Length: 119
Image 1 (cartoon, one colour):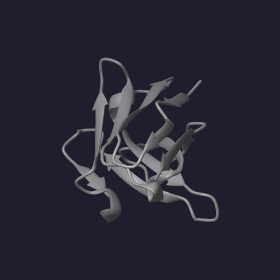
Image 2: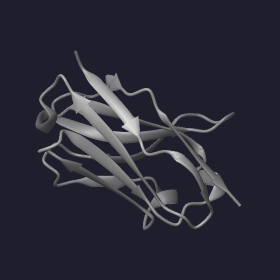
Image 3: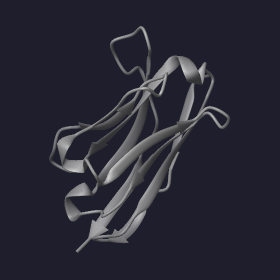
Image 4: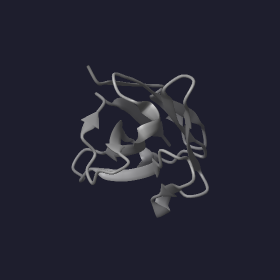
């Protein structure tokens, strides 16, 4: 079965860094785009970053540009989100999700990992 497992969240102080991992299985990793989403209490789910299956394209929401970097490793079927210079407003549950390259929706989701940034 398709499985996505996030890890790497935790409690950090403002200005600190975390690297989130999304270990995947059960589907052809290189045929799917991978995205990171987040949802903070009382706020709508927000797309944070997305990387294409070909790795030729990566996108970021404006609020994280210059601070976050998305990547993927085909040898490990794993996507990453390196988060630097974290801010309290980055506090949220972070989810990874996949979309087939020819598809239009993200259909597979992980369970999420909590990121809390203190000031």
